[in-house]
Length: 79
Image 1 (cartoon, rainbow, N blue to C red):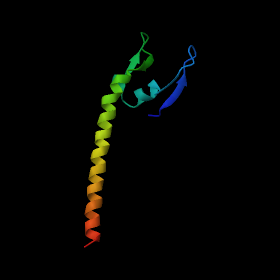
Image 2 (image 1 turned 120 degrees about the vertical axis):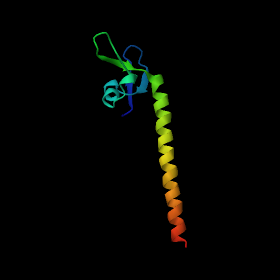
Image 3 (image 1 turned 90 degrees about the vertical axis):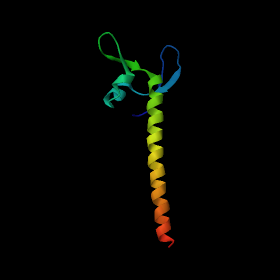
Image 4 (image 1 turned 135 degrees about the vertical axis):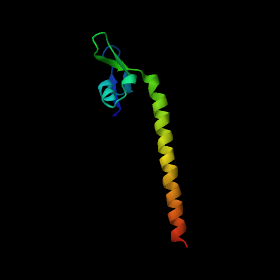
């Protein structure tokens, strides 16, 4: 997903977010909203937070695993 900035024509307000079609293409259908014609309308932003937290936790586990590997390699080098 690529974050984007966009400006509302009516108010000039600048917002930040994602393109709903890209989110849909990323297999995150539960976050995408559709209009009565079945066309993509927008995103349910509050549903991003659990996914973000889960991704951070997964990355943290990878980091900790890599750090443990580095520590073990350092021990082997220093013997």
